[in-house]
Image: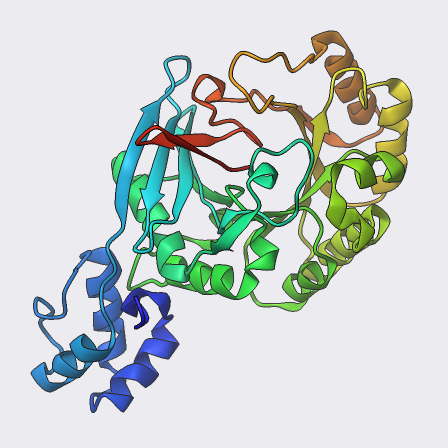
Length: 349
């Protein structure tokens, strides 16, 4: 599709587009409302916008088709995984994770990923391409429908590294939070990064109200370098320093995600390394059991050691949660999600 989808633009950008099409800026809120709240798929149905303006918009900005081509539901916990296919055949996955009285949507920012983390299924496929804002918000719309119109939170933790597609992710955040559109609060959004330091610092100085999650993975710099290739460019110590700056600049808490590899990084000594690394930072640590990249494989998680690891962090004054992973039976857990359509499997992390 050579022409850009009209849903790739924020309200401010739409106002400029409307003016260049001979209309008034005051049409922009109405256009946003039609695009997202009313889910219009053509300009023809949009009342309240001049016909001449709609004609010019129709000539320059098409509506791409977003199709859910596969849907899987966990028989264990009700997690729902959706595979969306876009105009060029590229696909991405989204997940609706149920909880007590809440549902969270996990969105992808890229098709594939260039980071190549050794434990992540998406890294095995490489990067296909960045997702456009319209493709990110289309995932939200699909998840919202699946959730019956009620989502409690949104996490950018799907396929890809959000901070390597930051311009498009920023736009999608503005579109999702526009009060004339989806009107979803930024305070209920979290973006997860493996540690792209310049963007962490940019976020710290921005007006965005989204939350930050840093995938520490493991607290040993050498071990992390083996698991996370991007660590060579943005070492763990620098990423954590950037997260510390974020907390101070924003007066906000940061989430640290630590993957528990049974027998590799779950000892008391490993816990002490993590405590030393994040000491003094207003944070919450999520301990995430490693999820294998193939069905039926063992994660080798040692529950007793993981519990002891958690106990040591709590004793050091760090809020720590051992996450109960969901959707593993449909390959929908963290670092594991895989969508199947037409007999073809694609991966995401």
